[in-house]
Image 1 (cartoon, one colour):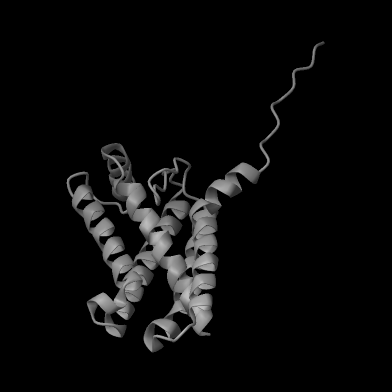
Image 2: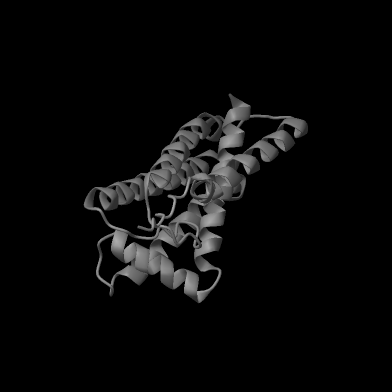
Length: 187
């Protein structure tokens, strides 16, 4: 269980780090994310930038607390980071589900780049991330003592999982069959 918890924590750290970096990499990315916060969060244009900053700061804080819990005091900060990321995931999932139910065509901008509208792939990704967070909990609380070989393997597995979770909706879009163009028949 220690190994699974380590892989899960690493995957969460890398996914949330990618989310933060994708949103703040340039002004245009942050503006696009702010617009998606306004639309998905159903907040006014005046409040959306403040909420967008809060989301990015919460993601960064959760990431740091999960990545280096020893730097902040150990288990309690790590659990705080896990609860922060889990709360964010639950909020994101609710916002996406609400947008789908309302029939809104809004770009997710979860990682700053995706311009496609939110849909079932984001719900699946968030559900998987919530399961990853649940799997990380025992190791976050107990700490664990993995060998360096197990830690290395956990990093490889966690990085692979994070990569698949970050680009998963793009992969679904690429693999989804495109509708055939209507053919014209002559009389």
